[in-house]
Length: 196
Image (cartoon, rainbow, N blue to C red; front, side, top):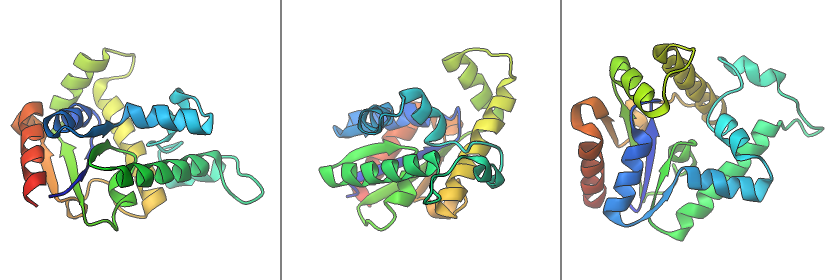
């Protein structure tokens, strides 16, 4: 049995909802917004800052990190947030069974053998429809919002892990939420995490 489940996801695929359902089904702790709250309390960063910078790069390429301010040791504020997130995820994993959504948790916990890594994806049209339903319309087309968020997640992941975000071989399971649905994905993850 894998006691820690990490959920990585494309924006709009329902990964957050799936993670919450998995945690409910298994009766374990769930960390997503909760992790943001903990980090805000411990670091003094605002929740908004952590939401915007904890998973997303400052720009659309790794080069964008060259323009963030750095202290005398060469660390930027985003580096500091990365190290604090990493420390907190490692602490959370020690506490007991849980579901952790995003924040490179799959990479951070890569040396543990009790982790089940999942990636949730779906076609662009399905995700675009979902983000309008969940987050509402904005001036920016839903497809553009998806591309931008996913690109910044991928750049952030590459910058801090030197790995490719979303590559199937990095996960134990990848699921298309448009095929299995939110409930179906959650059920599959809950069941499979108990069997491996």
